[in-house]
Image 1 (cartoon, rainbow, N blue to C red):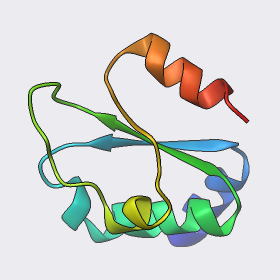
Image 2 (cartoon, one colour):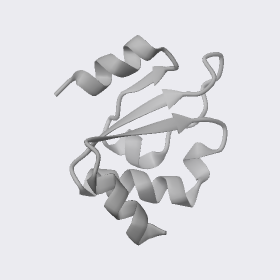
Image 3 (cartoon, rainbow, N blue to C red):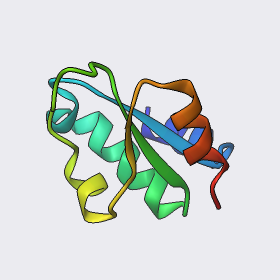
Image 4 (cartoon, rainbow, N blue to C red):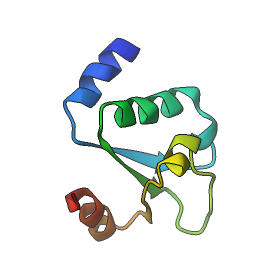
Length: 82
């Protein structure tokens, strides 16, 4: 799956990570985030639940990835930023 995932990531300019209760502990999610950064892509976190403060995956913390709530205008603004 990693080979297929690498190819799909290479076809994008950004990765949106849906942040929920278990996101930060999922090995596959961590790998996809790290691969996105390796390929030089923007990574944006979107909190699934607006009333929760679920943990942020470590690679996103290390890169100071922007994190927003599930508000389409906020997500769009982050994706449009250089």
